[in-house]
Amino acid sequence: MSNGLFINSCFTHCQSEYPFTWNNAAGGSPAVQNKGIAKSVGDWYFNRAEVKAIDCPYPCDTTCRHAI
Image (cartoon, rainbow, N blue to C red; front, side, top):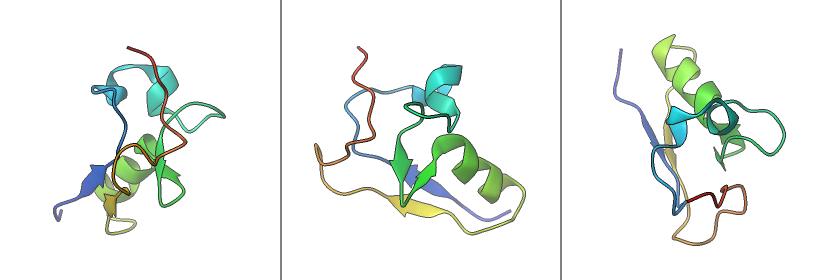
């Protein structure tokens, strides 16, 4: 397994802690390169794709959930 990255520009941390921010359901996971957290981690973990997803500078990501 190679190294993988999923770095988004969201203000909220610990987004993988809750199902509604982990899953790719509508309004759920923040996305980088049109892929949510769960899909990116699954692709990396199961060697389906190399994942080096780095978002644009804060606060550009419109897929972020603003729950604090």
